Image 1 (cartoon, one colour):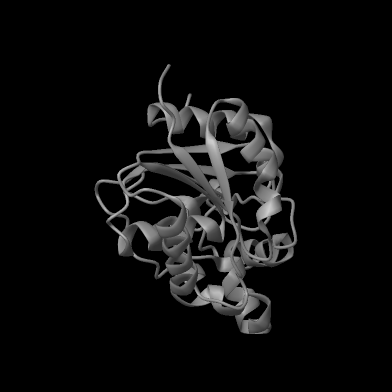
Image 2 (image 1 turned 135 degrees about the vertical axis):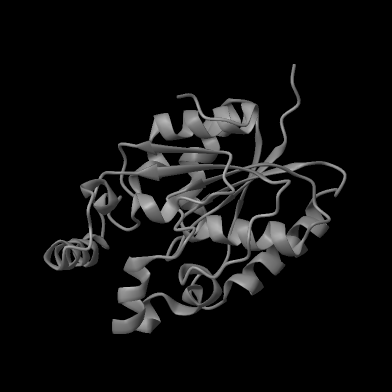
Length: 224
């Protein structure tokens, strides 16, 4: 039987570790040992939160044993920051779910209107300036295309503005999951990228998303 790495699951903005539980349970059923990492997404910035992940691992995990990382939204950017700044850890494979790798238009609108809503997660993360992905890291990216969520009002407004200005030649560039555009999830350094019929939060309880996450962690690619 193939040995499976410990999987660290990292939630997104305004969330807590419990939201990753459905995905964790499905990965556990597939034989993975999981840990739902909890952090303060509003009060602390990305540097502090990845530093705390490093501290937790130092107390709870041996550096000779590889770990896999799965992050939802902002959690995926914490993965990016963590693997860049803490190279001593052996990273198996990483999966991000609805993560705005190149920055978030939605977060940008909210930041300009009421900065307190995104807290310290905007600077060096949601603004698109997170650390580059190291070459040795195998990353799979899952995006959603069902536009349901609190951010859809901002993105609907942004899409209307783009159409009016004639700045969008392709309708597919306007596709989002209710919070994050599909195009914002794309990163050249990723090993594989897949778009699924789920919303930004809905992807966390979706069985097919869990199956694709499990498949990537095992084989380093998605099941296309």
